[in-house]
Length: 351
Image 1: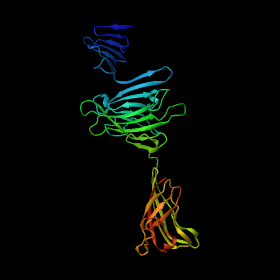
Image 2 (image 1 turned 120 degrees about the horizontal axis):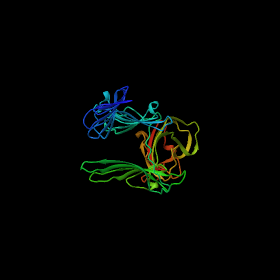
Image 3 (image 1 turned 60 degrees about the vertical axis):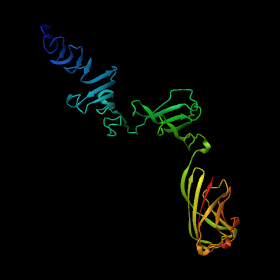
Image 4 (image 1 turned 180 degrees about the vertical axis):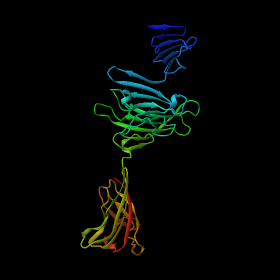
């Protein structure tokens, strides 16, 4: 049985009612608590008595498939205030039993997989976290990718003149036609120069490895290696034998950049052994592709001989010769060496 009066319609138990609290306003109550309001502006409020939009909900909005699975949308602020600095917009899956999937916080930052910031910068607008390490996945949905097609891009823009212009770009491009289990891809890094309004390629990482610079796309010109290491130089003659030779000091270092090797060494012998013929420096860290001259950096002045003034490595070899003469065209004989003499040299060559 219901009761009807001027301002409401209620059930006999007076806990559920349809009210008309003021002009052009309707409210719905259950358990004597207002649950829904339609005000004179036509704004609808659920959980709030003062809606300011066509639909305003205070609390969680849940979508259910009827089989126990939920998707929740939560808008929250401290003390129920949406002006409070801690308010946020939250997305949840599987209702109260699952962790938050995504939220937009009070700094307008999108947080994915986390309810708290990863970075405290208000400018870090997209932040993600995962127990396995968060990742960003960009995909091209195309079954006919050919060389040069973009796979994904990250673009950077500036708005100094009132319109956005591209300042820099990182792009992944097909480095050949794609097929199933065959996805050659390169990375391009582009920047905008002073006085320019669009980016130009500055560096490229090729699909097979190696770097090219400033628009050079030739694989042959790619910088494909950087390496530092040590090697053990040996000092011997072209004929004869080691005999009882002994070293006081042997040290070699190298730096390899692409195909260019800078090798240097220092040698001191305490016993020259039974070597004869001309001097050879062995153990070079890489085989030379071309014959190259180097520099004999130091040989103690008390032992300097005109026969020993230069050094060179030959194509296809891993040893050097020492040269002298006025034209540096005479191979220096092993007999010019003395014990305890410090020999130091450097050679730059291609491999």
